[in-house]
Length: 444
Image (cartoon, rainbow, N blue to C red; front, top):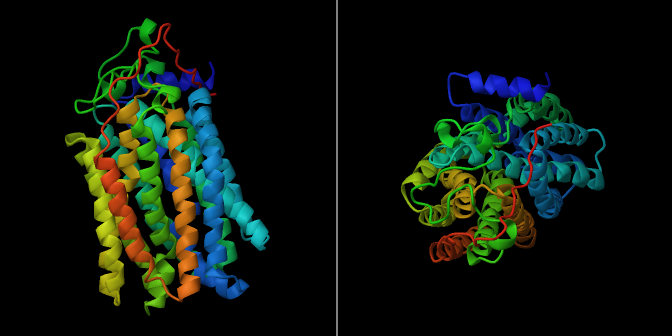
């Protein structure tokens, strides 16, 4: 009996819908990817720049370089998720992420830092982002909003705890050793649940999404169900990437996502440094990052549930508009209470950004080639993150502060909201004869 048989039998005998175990294992992956998150880099920004004499632009540029690399890795990651299944992709990603994080403190030059942290950013932005979101949307259709909300909140918990853990390590053992122990934590937390629990689709074990009964053995590869508010065909049909690329909706989702992740990266990477420039203590600034993450935990659940009740494009536009407004509030931060309040509000909006785009892609284009479609979308996200990280750093270097950054973020958020709300779902996919077969997925 091979490992797949053991996992499949275990999955069939659990007293609860096995999709929740899938959500747990995917959550482990998105939790640990925060070892290379912008907020984690933010707490290293000051000690590394002071110790090594590097500029903040140089440090932030590593995230930009990684984001650019993730743009090229995303289509390949989407293909690999569809071809080999999320288990192999996510487990391999955890192994590489752990090693690259540990290696940052071993050999410190600008080139080595860009290589190792850039690898982490590629893992963060491509295979983990695509693999975790795809497998959860495969297992949940009617309850996709709440499931992705829980996944997003898991990421947000890691987004809060990893920087705080890093700050404690920096205070205790120094920034070099802090990178090493962050890498070890990736392996300890993620590898076992991913390898032992992950299964690609409910149809692989004769189940339907959301726990809606079983399938006949002859129907194991047939999808099922349609979300009530989705203006698309049944999930079993869905869109191929080639057909999806002919729709305005896919391009608008990509471009708008790039704009919003410009906002996201600008704030996340530079927030701690901005707060310290405002006279706020380093530990308090790190704790404000944790409050941002706490807001994102609540926001992920809130916006995910909202996406089940209202058309997803309106929910997405509301997220963009909320983040645009809150970005301006950073200009008023001049004390610890204000720092915590604005960071929490921004995190609340960020929780929606971590959840709603994934729901929109799955609702619009179905489960058929979801990995490939997500692989097309993610380069826009990576490009936005790269531009935001570098752009905010350049504004600081040229002006001496970050205050010019936040009005720009507001403009970009409003633009994204307008583009999203005026672009409807694409409707039903073209009918092809003979039908295009699904890519074969595997877990081993």
